[in-house]
Image (cartoon, rainbow, N blue to C red; front, side, top):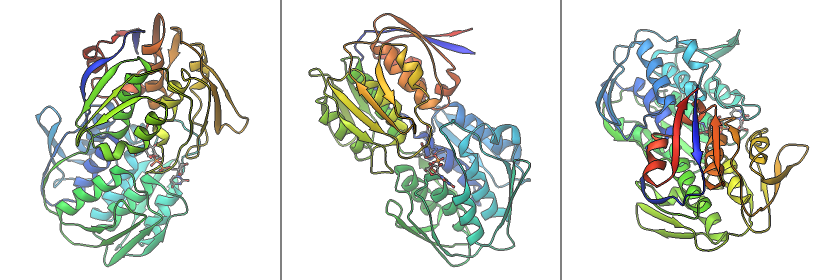
Length: 420
Ligand code: EPU
């Protein structure tokens, strides 16, 4: 089990290139199962979650060939099983996309209940509701989800809640279904649009991705394509906060500035310097930043994945901030860790809101990454803190941040990875 040792107090300065989006790549790669030919995917982030997805695919009979860093040729035409390795599927949330893709292509799928970060209740009832509406039979026995269908037929599906995973999974299942599927109350996140663009390039007929009504006309064949994964909104947001919290000046390249608007708007409101071009954004410290109030919402609202990270920044703002978490029921688990740095914040009994009183500085501490984004928040705190911090449980961070040690080091930060 590795640890990061971070010596804080150094302003991060320079350029950083943002990697491909984890939450787009983890859907796009299983979606290749639908293609009748191999695909080449570019801008694939080299992170642990992608390695798990590759292992699941290889166990199904797919072949994966690394053409160069971040570019893979993936051939799913010789898949010989519809049962995913339980060891891998239970390790991550996105393994649920194998249900939609295998069901669509082969009429059945078997996977262990998806794992992932512990953020409170994370049911998959909306995914199942969608598959059943399309004509599948789904059962969960001893933690194994099995879905089967003689034939999938298009249907109108109204999601009870806005779910990124259910929207994308139903899209995968519906791509080859007979007739027209309409997903209403659909998620609008950038990765929903990226998956739809990829499927459309392969020959799917999907309209409306990025709005709350997505219409999918089933097709029988999908062809191989070359496709670059879109830039990671949350990795970008993390480096934006690192620039502000270390009183630094970072230019992020390879970003889609439109996707960053909910984050940019809040940083501007805090008096943090922002300059944008079409595909880059500069974030710089100008003056002590101010407290703001934030409520996490589905896109284009403020992303829940940025909540621990922005809360950590608000801990050093002037005044009192309030943060409401409205997506997940238990996403303040990291607060006990943050308190060790001298941060002042209180969480209500329902565990859905924080009141943060800004302090002048953090001090280095032994911190634990309680999940992926909580781990990113701990890195931000440690980079800003006076003195040295140790961050444990870094396997969470490495699930979603490519070359994080190298990127922070290149920006002038002091971070080392050690093995226990
Ligand atoms: N929900 C249900 N039933 C469902 C599906 C979701 O009740 O069938 C609830 C969830 O419990 C949650 C809300 O709906 O309260 C939203 O969940 P959503 O389905 O949108 O989230 P997810 O698919 O489980 C993805 C990302 C998360 C990100 C959320 C929200 C992936 C692999 N994961 O999760 O990313 O926080 O959307 O944007 O795409 C991360 O990257 O660190 C991460 C946790």
